[in-house]
Image (tube, rainbow, N blue to C red; front, side, top):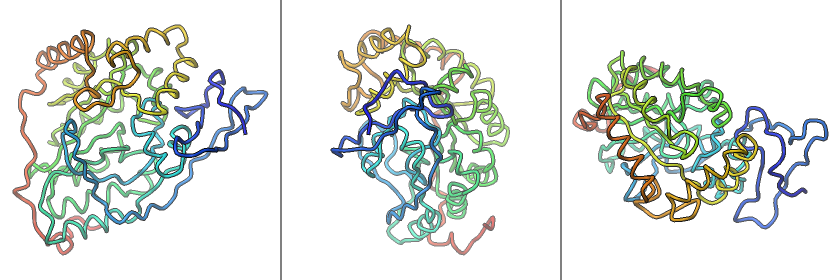
Length: 357
């Protein structure tokens, strides 16, 4: 057992270098630092079967623009240090730190359960988001193909889907996405936090590089699939100056829509992010944290609906105004064409087999 140490060396290839206690647990096991490297031992990723019964998650949050989502994975090996989903791992008995990015729950039966749900007479077609919590195209997806299996089902039923990812791997599934897009039933959004590859490697260690994400936008756009960019999250004092450049690069690649969110630091993510700043940007740490507090009513996190994604105060308004100005300048969000359920094929998907397995 050991106490948390924020002055340790970063673990290469991981966003977090710590595994803090689960807020619901009294005790936890941590690892001592290696005397030579000054860091904790690197952890291999382990995968666990998630036998959740309901594959479609529902939310009623007033500031989330969708009601239902499909999350093939819980936990995310991308390891983004700022990820607001980290605390969800604590409900599973894990830590929001290293556990979140190295102990991954996998819904191996997701495609089958999704087909059963869409085949039900009670299902009324509506847009599904993949995914609302963790990335559906994290590294394991290249081998496991669970997200691809779900897209296969959605293409069979022609049920609309909106995909959000940081990974170029989404281009692998252009066949299903294009079929859906032909019926106004598919949209993809690439999240781009920074164009600085070195910063991205520190902050989002196992995601696709910014250049590869822009390439994905270009590839999807050329295939006729509506694609956009999320400048998310905007980190005040660290990445906020990049918004205009990200929007311009995305528009040039073929993006047609754009959105943004301000950094959120719920529960244990606050400490993880503060420690990360101390490791990589000690000279800018207080500047970043003070700007966050300026937008969060003096705190590092504001969970209130209507405030948590956008912030408040003059600085938050400045970010919002500039984002709107630059989005218009680069021709983004000129059309707000929603996805359509008109082509949905009720109860027939499992028989159609349009694309095979």
